[in-house]
Structures are given as C-alpha cells and as structure tokens.
Length: 604
Image (cartoon, rainbow, N blue to C red):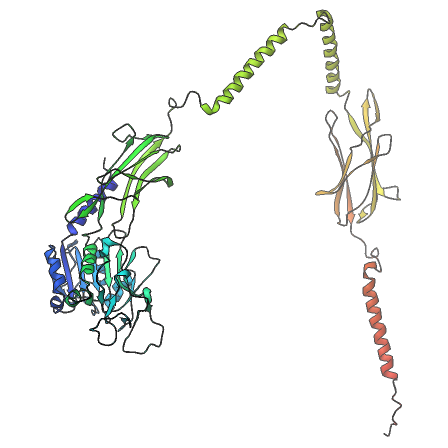
C-alpha cells in the first residue's frame, strides 16, 4: 500500500533518473577551455550528457524559461568571472540548487567575486586573492619553482567509494587555491584535503601573517548535499579537470575526477523506496487501526540506481522507528534479500497516532526518508482478559474473606454457652445496655462533661490588680479557676494538661499551667521584649468535655526613657576606655604646659 509520503519520494527518485545524462550548461572563462579540458567534456558527451557551452558573462544566459528549468546540471569552469551575464546571478544559482539542480564549480588562485559569493552560499570559503596551495615537499617535477603544482596523496580522499571511487590510485595533480569549510556543518563533505605540511598563501609574497588555511584544514575539493538531495562540488583548481592533469605520466586525476562528477550528477549514490507494507502478523493487508499490544510486521524495499536501472540496495544498518512525538520503538531491520528489509515488534500499550519512520542518512547516498501514519486504539471491552494472572492473589484474598465470614456467621449463630441459661444471659445483656444508654443520655443532655471558667486574674508579680498596660520584660502571673458540673453543683475541675498561650498573631509564649488546688491553675512568665497588643488565651478541648475557651486582651508598651539602665554592664569596657582616654589627655596637657628645660638659660 503506497501513501502520499512514499509517492512523493518515488517521484523525486524518478526525477533523479532523468537527471542522469541530462542537459548541462557549461560556463567558461574563454572558449579555449574547451580545448584544454577536451577529455573531460568528451567523456561527459559519451555518457549522453547534452552540453551547452557559453561564456560566463554572456548577456543571454538563462537557467529557466517560463518557470521551467532548461538544464538539469550546471558546470562553472570560469574562475575569474566577477559577475555572471544575462539573468544568471548567484541568487538564481542557489534557487536552482534549492529546486534540485546539481552544480560543479572550479576556482583558481584568481577567483572572482561571483565565485566567492556562491561558495559562501554553499558553506565554503575561498582563500584570499592570488593565494595558492603550496607544499614544499609534495610537488610535481614540472612545477615553476613556487611549489604550487602539488601532488595530493589519495589517502587524503574521503573514505566514501561511492563518491571518489577506489582510493588505491596514483597521486593527484592539483594547482589552485584552497578552501575552508565549517566542520560543524553536517551537509558539507571534505572530499580531498591537503597534506599536513601544505598551506595556502600568495607564493610571490613573504609570509607576514598566519596563513588562512594550513595543513589538513586546507580543502582541495569539497562537496555539499542539500536536504533536498541536490549536490554541489566545489574545487579550487580548474587545472584538476584539465587534459594535462588527466594524462600526466606519473600522477593521475582522471579516475577521481570522473567518480566525483558521476556522484555530483547523480549517477552514483542514489537510493529510493520502492514499496512499503505493514500489517499484523498473520494478515496480509494493513488494518484501519491497530490495537495496543498487536504484533506487527513492517517491510520496506529499497533500490539503488546503477547506470540506468534500479537494483536492490543491500545494507545491514537500516533502522525503523515507531514514533508518537518521541520514538517508542527503535530497531535495526533485518534484510531478507532483494533490497527488502523487515522488522517485527509489539505495538506499545499506549494508544494514539503513530508513524512508521525510516530516516536513513549515509555519506555519499541520497537521504532516504519514509513515514507512514497509523492509528493505535485501546482494547475494546470484549478484548480484555477475563482473569488477569497478576491479580490471582487478590482473587484468592477475596474468596478467603468470603469463606471466613461464612464460617464466622455459622459459629456465631449456632454457638451455645452452657454456663448460663438463656434468661440469665438476656438479663445481663439488658442491664449492660441500660447502663450504656443512661450514660449516653446524661452526656447528651449535659449532665456530664460540662466545665466552665469561673474566674481569671493577671497582674505583675508582687502586685494584686491588672495594670492599664504591661511593659516589655515584666514578670507576670496569670491564674484561672475551672469548675465542673456534678449533678446540680459546680465543683473544682482537676487536670494537668491545661495550657496558656500569650498571643500576638502567633503565640510568643506557650506553657502548661500548674494546678494549685480547688480548680485553680497558675502560670508565671516574663513578657517578651516585643511591644504590641497581646491576648492571654486558654483553649482547652478534650473528648467528652465542653469546649473551654477564654481570652483576655492586654497592651504591652516599650520601656519609658526613665526605665532604661543608666549604665549597661556589657558596656563597662567601653566606659573604661573613654575615661582612660580622657585621663590620658589631661595628663599629657598638664605635662606639656608645665614642662621646663633647665639645661640651658634663656639667653643661650
């Protein structure tokens, strides 16, 4: 069963086939490049590429007409161009890439502003004007003495045969400028790097500043595969594709150049999804909705473009994710031959909307992305287990309790006490019931369990009446008398858990009062050193007794100025220090004013 996502992917892959051997626009600095690079261009024509040669500043340049692109590929062999001609600009080239077009660009040590801007758009940076890659150890015998015609080691090629082919080839000739790319950019590929001894600088000038590109940070060839699978290859050497580099007696660049060209024009490294199926194990078609805990089989068939045919793609690292916002299942699929991959798993016990998702991204291959949305519903009420094995202990507990109640009821109903007759047992039970009923009736009608406050007093210790206001840090005595109703009389209530609180919003003092006989309770304490409005509060609540609640509001003022200590004991050291200083000044002044030097006369 094919879905919209797979249909779109298949369409893109079919469009890719059309790209292979398609119409190609070749932009040149001058028509002489057709002769110096004839081997490369003839090789393209032999592979059914239709080449259209134009100068880079041709005023009639067009990539598209009436919204349709006239070319599938673009080759720019014009390093020195400062501005493209006609309707061609860096912006139109980036739009061409965004729409799936492929671009091969070569620069040189004299690259123009247009190429620098295009490189920047693709994530690369060309070295400064007139800079060349220099290697004083690895250079060709035909070099002019500046060591700019370097010999690149094939070991510095990227380890991706689908892009560069076999790395066991002759050394590669390179003459041109260096590139720099951001290592953090996941879309950029470093196809060929310089040796660790190379650097990029103007060979005709002394080195005054640290070179822009040094060692393996110097890129000779770089590539970009965009998220829409469009491909761009950028090299700083037009010479790399020349007949001279292809036919050198020792060094060879032809095989690598052809492999890179086949990759950038999507003859290599193109894969697609040809079919996707999913169903419950034992069935043959996908259901309208899955049920939680279903056993599912998912199969996907992947093909690879080989020449002009699609052949099965074989790998062992293709993964499937079963996703609801986050992956609930992630597993490596099992290859079953002929490009078919299979995954079997149990759907999680969480219902919702899920996706079967395959997201396969490998260096040199087009991005493979396939999603299929499915619904997962909960169990119907008829699908739940009648008895859950994990609940067996609870079932046993319930039945054992039922059995126990049955046995208890049987014994209770048929048990006979031979020590007493039925009449005696009945009489005893009635008497006990009457006693309980009487006690409850007395309590509910307040014959029992009633207490009250009969008097409250508070004053400073040593005084006999409450003041208008207390002062902070006063010593206070508080007394309360509690009585209990006994028949028709009030008698003293005796307890040892009556508490007093001295409250200003929150309690500042909480203490258990001391019984002093005849229902009288007493508490002595020092008033806190915080002035304000306080309450003496007794809140006594016990089961069976009426609620005892008594509050008395009092004011607490700060000390008057006459009540503060004249001399604070803790300040005695400071007083002594002050008086000793005054005494010292007095002695010094006396000596200074009355001192006389008798060793000399006034005239002397």
